[in-house]
Image (cartoon, rainbow, N blue to C red; front, side, top):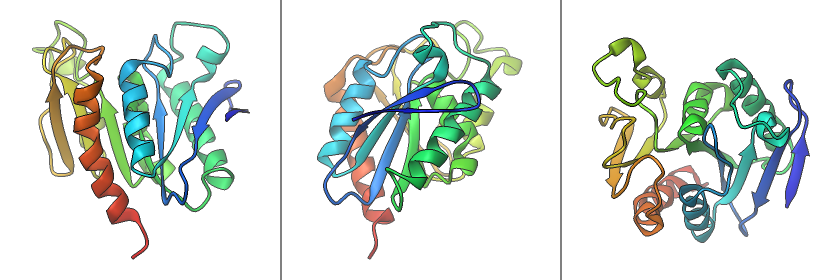
Length: 206
């Protein structure tokens, strides 16, 4: 099912795949220059559905409008929050929410985790720093990950030029073969499935 939702920065598009008797929904955003059909998002979606999790893939308004250059972070965050609020009031009502995405989408999910009421965050290829800027603390985005207070999974390519985040109090980091594009779908599925299964178990009514 495809849904268009109005946001403060234009219409967003949501691709919804529902799982029977789901207690949890996984809402995923795309990378800066790509869409929701990237290999890692597809592999994660399939793994989630198999775990009985409903999945919503969100296209930001700039992509829906046909632009490839991403909107500024405040606009991305505002559109994402608007989409989550509308989904939680309708199609995803009553479900625990795991927020996430790849690269830029993962950053958005981290920055807005509190406002969206996410019970977990799943990051694919989190861009810790721009390529070649590992030694410049002013370029680090690690503070966005560190600010997340709910269980977080980061799946990162072992040769990602955007860096490898450390594990943290709420954060598991799993490395898989590859770089920032994360094309090894079998490794991605193997990384996300146990975490999703555990998270669904912890968020389901007892």
